Amino acid sequence: MQLAYDRNAPRKTVNLTVNSDLLRMMRAEKCNFSGFVDSAMEAYLKQRELERWKEENKASFESYNQMIAAHGPISEEMGLL
Image (tube, rainbow, N blue to C red):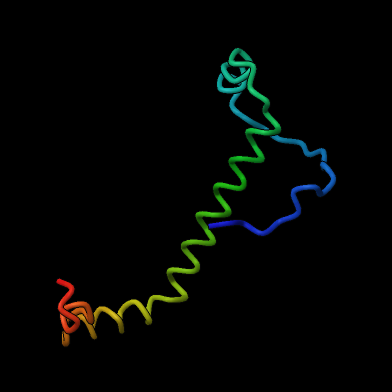
C-alpha cells in the first residue's frame, strides 16, 4: 500500500526522548537516525491506513464471505476448480 505524502517536504527539527542504551547501540551501527525514524513513521502510518481500510470494508468482506458460503465461488460455476 502506497502512503500519499510529500517526500520533498522540508525537514522539521523536533525534540525526541529515547532510551539512551538503544541510541548508543544505533550510533554504534552508524545508523542514519533521521532516515530510520522517517522509515519507522512511514511503516506505522501504512499499517494504520491498512487497518482503517480493513475496518471500513469489513461489511463488504463479510457479505462476500456469506455469498461464497451460500453459493460457492464463481469459479466452480465456470468449471475452473
